[in-house]
Image 1 (spheres, rainbow, N blue to C red):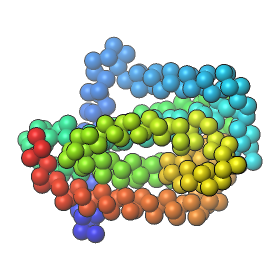
Image 2: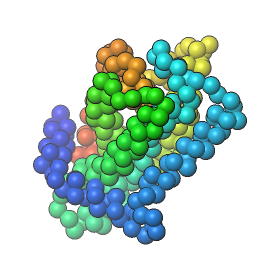
Image 3: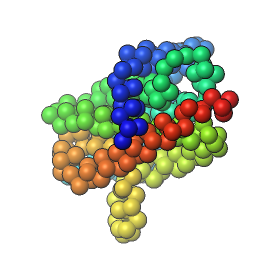
Length: 273
């Protein structure tokens, strides 16, 4: 518990620095590109068009059911894909955030626990822009802004908590064992096809046990929550309150474990240079 309190206090105390470093991180990643930060939108746009073509045009996929609403496949895909981008980039970049900055850390005076946080924050700005673009596009599909959009604030916060807890673990393990980052990169590519981003998990209704296991994926909880909000279907986190309790229980366990190993090993991180 002491490790958890330490990590939380560091995030609060250095929140201003986290914001500044996150903006610098975002700008530095795109400074050598002619189109600059426009690539943060162009690249995901190209990806979603490819997946839409493969999973919709070639497979002639029809509408997808969200709650009691039948949603066009492109709108259904769009409502979750930008969240997947946020998750993937935050997790991958967060996992290598500490060991790629060890030389800088030896000269700077701030807690290491804020490093995964400001990396995630840098992706968060892009996420907000993509969310705005998604909302604008969905207006043309007839899914107008409604009261259910308020739960987006909850799911954005829930996403941030999950991604930080995961990055706290992976950034620590990747610093000690560099193979962890490589393994994570391969695993996350597989996760794209197993989390309900590209196809509805309800297609496995004939294999109920497998479907239920796949739905325990915390990313699936966030994806469905975003869709329920954007399509104005229901208050997802209330209707599926048992799933909500499971999600936060898992996040708490991950954060407790991440904070413990981070505080335990960070004194020795410089030794891994």
